[in-house]
Length: 118
Image (cartoon, rainbow, N blue to C red; front, side, top):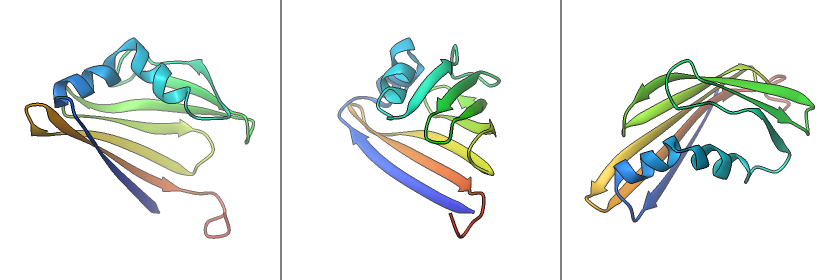
């Protein structure tokens, strides 16, 4: 199992940052920055049970992820149902630094096919 953690600070409130991710533009803006990924179905919200279906052109495979946890302004988690990894779980954790400053912590837990060769 491999773990990846990225922390980013923003000059906006935690609630505003979470609101961007929750907005209709949030998903489109973030996924459109990933080359080789085509959105076949986007989730309607960040709520538990919502599903995203992506086409990853490099693998020519559908990547299906479902939201499995949601706490307003604090976190949401998506987990691969099927796709290019043996396992993939992405936690988006929102922390307040001050009234007008926040931190987004992306924690990704993944397992590859043919590890450690891959």
